[in-house]
Length: 306
Image (cartoon, rainbow, N blue to C red; front, top):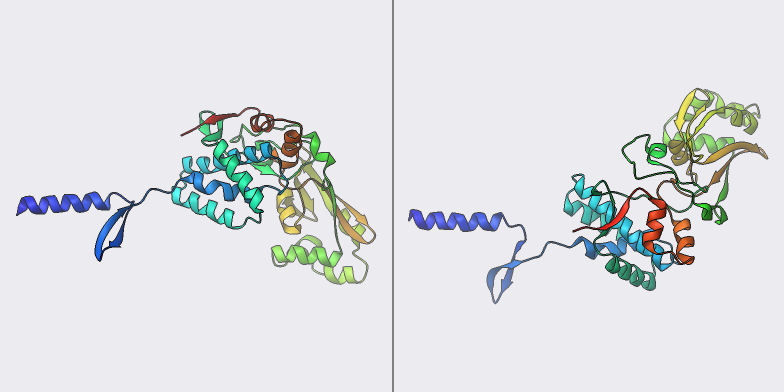
């Protein structure tokens, strides 16, 4: 009896310790069906298609596939659960509006770059990307204010200045600016411009020129992006103000133009890592994905990982 009980417990424990069995029904009998752990590679293509422009050249798509895979592997290495990474890819893929043709292109790119990832110091690392910049990418120190991203360097990306969205003016009336600040934090406009700012603006006393004059002490990084500025008596990071005002980038200047506050922005996105505009230009010039990645991440390597 003891032997039988011990065997039964051993079988139960073995089943419980193996997470890829599920229950099924076959010919009226309940059976156990072996399921394979989902392969991350199977979920990459839809996620890649969500990140690339529709007319992106093929070698740039291959580079993007390597970066999406690298991000996933880096997250897993940092302690993110495998299932959570898969779920992230699924959600990313569901947001894709890519055509059937682009989906096929991304599937091919994922297959051709299988197991290839960005590597630094013997481990997979995330390679951030953005749509276009101001001609120079930002380093890890620039954007994260940390030395923990040594593979992110300032890199020349001259192709970006030829993009249509290289310069984007974003204008706000005084009231529109106040509304955007208050939407981010209740009462923020009064903290920055004073308790009666709306009344003063309505009366023409606090106009666009006066407001523009409150934007002071601009601090920029090596790539020319605003890292910090003072508005009134309050200090903002460039990225925070970018998010509050929904600006294309944090590489901006501020002027009063025709009674409005104008932010003249360069580029589109955070500016660190790979410029998609630059990657596309390099691909059209005949550069391979590996060359594109080596340009934007010169201190990292593209390696096969398992």
